Image (cartoon, rainbow, N blue to C red; front, side):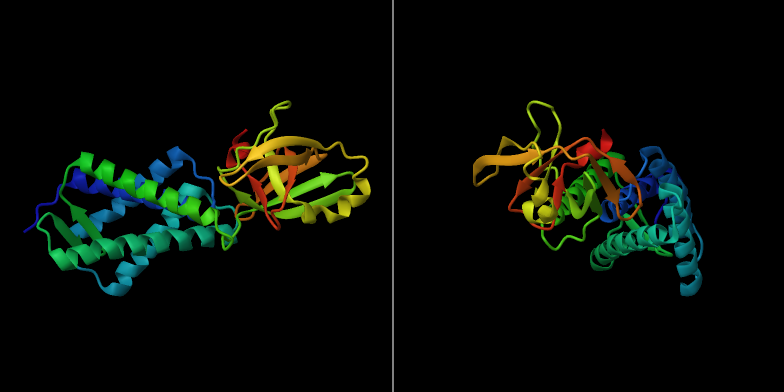
Length: 268
């Protein structure tokens, strides 16, 4: 019979829950406080003690798992509207099913002596150092995957960028991309890159707008881009409803339909 150490079981599940909550935050673009994430991970790890009880009926086990997921997500992200809560719960469930499915597949295939699986909970008897390294690698892979998604046209945008100049207001789909490191050398302001066609209604103001040309470069080319300072720019998170006024310049490129900004400006 497999010997289960409670401390290893709890710590293992804290790490797993922390990874899954961080993955959920990445998927839904939801802000996640580190302390709340740790506390929610610890709370969620307590449900892993179900592995110690006799096998539960499927329905009861499912209801317990659902209640655990809802309360863990609410503890980590807070409750900021039904829509946002449902998105976070769905993402958390999806990440759980994928992770648990992968673990169970390994368990069913290899039947390793150091792994025990019961009541949809698992126990792995291996070193904490290996646990830290493996979860760090998994989270790094998720971050890379998320960044690759952000660079594809099919990405479901998380942001809207509202730009006001005089009485004109333009709302454009926003794309957070760390690859946009363009900054004005004189003012130090970051530049949000937009398509000129997104600002067609500004053509009557072009003779009054103070455009400047600043150099920029990509992997394939180096050139200059016209930029101007709007009266106001606000970035809106579609999932949380949070709004952030930012001090930026607007640059025009051949890009259409996207306002590409560096996510660091949301932290300033």
